[in-house]
Structure formats: structure tokens, C-alpha cells
Length: 507
Image 1: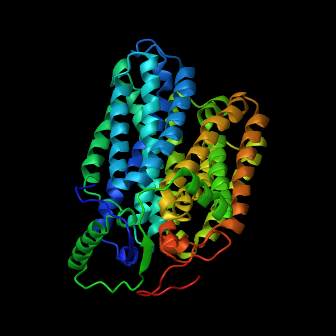
Image 2 (image 1 turned 180 degrees about the horizontal axis):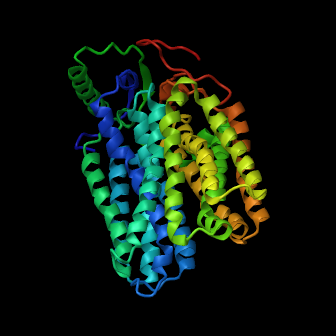
């Protein structure tokens, strides 16, 4: 923060309403570029490691490591690092602010990726794969909370979905990059794979330069006793937007009263999420588990299925993966707007159930021997077009349906659960099924993922929150507002806050 002393008390503010009524502007684009583009790096990182596993294990790669160690040990350590990083940095994000942490987590990612490129021994490679995951896990908590608190409520759904879906743009680039990096006519065996990591560092440094200009969340500052700084920041943003648009902004009438606090304990976070919002917690679990298993059912054995059942060369699987990655990216890009217009419940439930049903159909066609490598890839692309929008909405959901003081920690917790299920339980379940070479086993893997995705969609039918175009404070009353006497709300209560200066309105 700055040298301004942190003082707490009971204050009234219009800052959330002022942020939500802003039209889209260059300032918002700066936020999207500075914060959202890191998922492109994550997608590139994960995809590259998976596709260069074979090259790393070859003689002359400069690293005495086996294919199984890259796809097994290193992958598990990356997942473990992501889970630990999400929980560790999620807590710090709620305590010390969004900006400090989204700078620190990117720095951890950059340093670890650079060290990975310099690997000379398996233990070094494993260590920095864990630390790279540690940084990426922290990014999910810090970035999603910052984005949702800075983006106007009218656009929050589509922006959050597109940013999370940009992971697959990076995955597509990683798949194509690996084709070039693995070409020994261009790069020696011991250089190509190192350059792929180095490229991630270069892109990350560019993002870091932009991210330095992204401000702290005014919502976080208000609650943590930095009201004057928050008001000055929003004043500056409003002046810039008015100059850009050439017209004055409408008055923000909604005011809320909060009792500022410096921190919140783990006990209160747990009670808030699981006691006050049990249906929303159930929804978060269902969405993250469903998407984790569907993605592992398809992507974990992607290369093995193409090679074993369709005789595709292992060197050509990157092209097929680029196609399904493109389908994944298009889903949030084209469907994101509907989450703000048609609404959260129909779109979350619809994308989950439809993608699950389509995967059942794909499993049936595959089991009947009616698919080729090309048509199988087309089927996967269609499934993942809808599944990607649904999976991205899981991050949006847990970011917006819990009180602000718990936001980063809630994202971290559900992300860790989903990542652990997808990165640990998923591979344990699907490894034998997709690599056995038996069609019925692969069909069973698809059906497990499809069933859990449909089940999550059914949960969303009953428990999804109609959060579209609503202020975060209307979706879940901040604990600080409840402390100040605002009407609180868990799953069984209305969410309320003042709707006019000095006024109160029960939900």
C-alpha cells in the first residue's frame, strides 16, 4: 500500500455503486490485459510440458529424466504446487490486498519458469515445477478476485468467462509451439524445450509491465481502512472515463455502511461459507468436481487415444490438440455474453448438462467404432465448446457468491478442491482406462466424466444464484456491512444493503 496509516471505523460509501455504473472504457481494457492474459501463459505452460515429455526423456536432451517422471511426478508436483499456492496466497490476498499479491504471484511464476529452463537434474526440474504451480495457484485467487471487484456488474460475467477461457488460447499456442520446438532440424534436442520455457518468461515480463499500472481494488481498500485512497482512485477513474466518453457520468445513488476491519480469521471464513451459504458451497463443489473429471476424461488420455485407437503419429497429436483447444477458447468467447443476459442459472446448468450429454453421445459413437481421428476430434471440440464456458463459470460463481472478505480464500479453496480432484483423483481413475488399449475402458472413462458433469448441471438448476448484472454487495452482503447493521444474508435470507443515501432496504 502506501505510507497512509490504516484506520478503521464505521463509514458510508458509494464506491461499489460508482464502479458498477461505469461504462466500458480504456481503463477496463488495461485491467483485462494486465490481469487476464496470465491464463494464456498457464495454458501454454501446461500444454508445452505435456507435449515435450517425450523429448525430455530422450538421450541428448540435457536432462536425465524419464517420460513417466515428466507426466507423472512433475505433473503431480505442479498440481500440488497449484493447490498449495492457491490456499497460501488466497489467504494473503484477503489480508494484504489484491495488487500486492497479483504482483508477487506473477513474480513467483516468472522466476520458477526461468529456473525450469535451466534444469540440469530431475530434482531441479521437479522443484521448479512445484514452485511454478505454486505461483499459478496464487494467481487464480488474486486475479479472479481483483477482476470481479474492478469490472462493472453489467459486464462481469462475460469478462470473467473470457479471461478464464483464454487459458485455451495459450494451450493452442503451446501445442503449435511444441511442434516447432521438437523439430530437431530447427533446434538441437537440448535447446528447443528450454526455449519454450524461456518464451513464457518473456511473455510474463511483458504482462508484468502492464500489471504494474493496475490499481488495488477500491472495494478491498474501503473495508480495510483506506477509504480516502479508494475515493481518490475512483475519482481519477471517473474523470478519465468522462474525458474519454465526452459526457458526465450519472450519479451513483446507492450507498452502503460498513464497519472496517483489518482481517478476518479462518474460523469466520469457514462459518460464513459453509454455515451461512451451504447451498452455494454445494454448488461450488459440484461445479469444480464436475468440470475437473470431464476434462480429465478427455484430455488426460487424449494423446494415448489418438495413438492407440486411430494410429496417429505421436508427433502429430499437437495439431489435433490445437483444434480442441480452439473449441475450448471459442466457448467462453461466444457464450460469455449470455451469462449476463440470459442469466447465470440457465447458462451454467445448460452448459454443464449439454456438454455431459454430448460426451455420452461421443462415447457411444466411439464405442460403436463410428469415429475416425478427425471426427473424434470434432466431437471433442463440440463437447468442450460448451464445457469450457461451464468450467469458466465455476470460477465466476465462487468469486461472486460469497462475501467480499472471503472472496480470494473461497476461490482458492474451491480451486484447490477441483485441481486436486482433476490432477490427482482424475489421473488415478483414468490412466488405466484410457491407456489400456481397450475401447470399453475408454468409453467408461468418458461416461464417468459425462455423468459428473450432468450431475453438476442438475445441482446448478436448483442452487445457482441469479447474479447477472447485480452488484457483488447485492449478491452477498459483506461481513463488514453486517457488522455495521446492514441486513445480512445467507442462503436462507435475502441480501440487503442501502438503496439510497442513508437508507436501508431488506431484500
